[in-house]
Image (cartoon, rainbow, N blue to C red; front, side, top):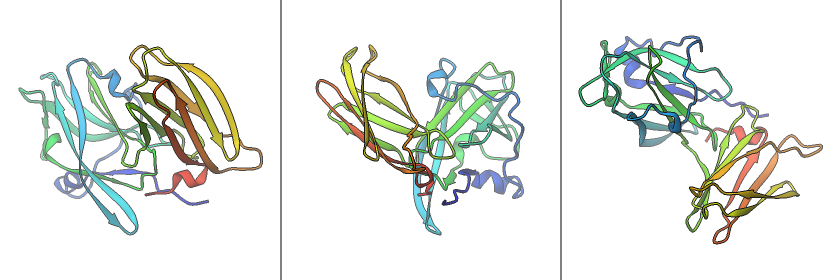
Length: 249
């Protein structure tokens, strides 16, 4: 079974500014909930922009810049991360908002928008999850990015598979671009086994999340695919499950 080092945030500039100690961690007590941009406090914006990719010792390191706006002034904000298969982790670095709602430093380290952070040892479909939470827990914003997305499109329809578990056996497939309220056919294939079911698309054309946990007798890994057939499209996502799904890219 291949080993996967926990995907970690490498806070390059912050580590140097803090005398090389890097970001500290705290318990998950008081951790944000939701962990999806749909649950952002109204008016706040938190995104990441990819800046570079490089191969180091056979593994891809992806560098991002965070972007924030709309955060209310008069509060203290903390950055949280949530690695797959672990509890949410709180950094020691604290921020406040400027007049434009951007997060700026409360200490001797750079403003949140002014440094690059890097991640490595991410597998296909593994999410990068970040959150900004005010210390009074009144304001929250979330980022979910995929350094190596598992996705497919057909016409206007789009599917994406997210790795949910550290054993590589659980996934969630989401979709968008289908006909509002149309009935689609979902065809799942796991190493020769197939299942078919009908699902109703939501009014906005998005697909209700499909949870997938392959269960093939006598196997602990393999290949899987999921096709969603609508009136005008039929995208298919393909992915590995089990230990091969955890291979760092």
